[in-house]
Structures are given as C-alpha cells and as structure tokens.
Image (cartoon, rainbow, N blue to C red; front, top):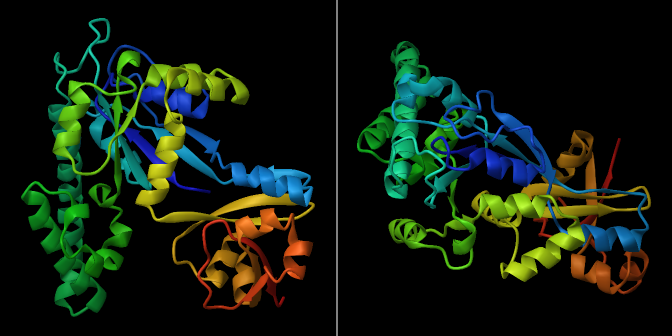
Length: 362
C-alpha cells in the first residue's frame, strides 16, 4: 500500500469528478447539488512506475504487483461543518483516517454549476475549509485534555505529557493556525500521534480549472500561488475524465497533444510521496516483480517487515542491487558477477529503486 488520500473541498468544486477520473470509476455520483456524496467513496489505484515493467521483463516474472494508493471522496464540507452543518461531523471523522488531504479548490467560472456561496472566491473557500478543520481539531483536543486530566493529576507520566502537548496545541489552534505549522512539532509528534488530528496531515492544494486554463492557469490559481509558498497542483477534472477513458497508449498521445507533462494522477502521486517522504523498493523473480512503499531512511530489517514480519525477526542480510545496475547488468546473475550485488546488514538504509532479496532465519 502506498498511502491514503482524502479528497476534500466545498460542494460542487469537482471532487467527485476528479475521484472518478483518478480511480477510473463512476461510483461517485458527480451531481450538481450539495451533499450528493454521503459516505466516502473509496478507490484503490496502482501507482504508475515504469521501472517495475523493466524489472519484470528482465526477471521474466509471471506477475507484476505495483504498489497502490487509495483515494477517498469525502463529501463536501460547508461553513459550520465542525458543528454538524451539512452532516459535517460525520464527514470530518472520515478525514482523520487518511495520510494526505487533497484539498480541491474550484478555480473556474460556470454559471451552470452552482457554488454553495453563490460566488467564486478560491481564497475564501480555502479559509472556510481550513477553519472547519481547525475547529474540529480544537474540539477533539479539548475532549482529550479533559479526559486525561484526572490521570495527569495522579502522576501518570504519559497522561502528563499528553495534557501538556494538548494545551500547547489548543493555544496554537485558537490563534487560527494548523497543527502542522506548530514550531516545536517534532518534539511532541510521537505523543500526539494517536490523536489523529486532521490539521497535522500534509495537504496538497489542487486547483480545478477549466480546459483552457490547464497550461498556464488563470487569475484564480495565481491568487492561490501568491498566498501559499508551496507548490500547488493545477488540473482539470474534465480533462482527467477524458484521459481516464483512454487506453494507456492513447493516454500518452492525448497528454502530449494537449501540451501537459503528465496526468493529474501522476502529479498527485509524486507530490504525495514527497510530502510523506516515501520511496519505493522492489523484489524481482520468476514468480513476481513487486513494488513496496516505505519511508525514506528505513533500515533494511524494517523494509523486510513490509513483506513479512518474520523477515525482520530473523533478518540476516539483504542482497541488494541498485535499480540502474540491475537494468545495466540485465538481471541478478550478471550483477553478481560484476560485483554490483551488495550484501547489506541491519544498519543499511534502503534507497529508492533498490532491488532486494532478504535472507532470514526461520
């Protein structure tokens, strides 16, 4: 599994259209009225990575198993969602389960598609959503703090830590800031991990534009870019729908023909991996070639545990070939002969693209 993405935004910004395109499904009803999505629609898609095809071809694998990511189309939030407006509390609970929040913002004019506030103002829309997420975390933290205070006063060390962290974060939220911007977050992150706070999750801002604005954006996307120092992702949900309806070969031709570098799915995956500090390693053999997602700076035994927990328990060593060496040597045999296969121990930090074979004691 790669990671879980929750697609959020106001009603009628193109969330369900984007979800359908990204997951090549039509299960999320894309309708022109608020709250057409009640339960979060879920779709798992393979992560495109051409390296796995090359490895499989060399290893003559019977099966290719790419890593994957899961999208959740979470119903439109509105002002007051943290207090239950528009079924808000239910929707907010769904966002707590994802790794990355994809915040879709409407950056197009279309009189045939209603806007919940009857005006197109992307910065206001972003503020509405962010405020509701902050208020939701604030309410949760106050409940957590209240529930732990008795334990804390009795001297329970863990409770003392959690109450102290909650007090710091409550002040931060009350000042209108998201938890992910808290200056001393690294120090308390392990303490608050189980709280599953929404504003502690990385956010990808996705600007949904009309087809004519896909190459250079428009004044709406420029406003957002000026507001946020981080990069934003500009896509057209309608174009993504067209891409999704084509074969892989036709997709490449279509993308090239309209002048964009890559699909919205690829943009989201790349940005998501970067936000979460994720990389991919591979296992390759006659039975299967498979991709595995891990965090950067993962040591070999922990990477082995992704395959099976026994691999970590009985870890001996990891036979490792860098991806480029595997391709250049056309497989493991020549890589071994050329001295490109390395025997790595417990302290080895797995690199993106490593082709690995783990040796372990039963």
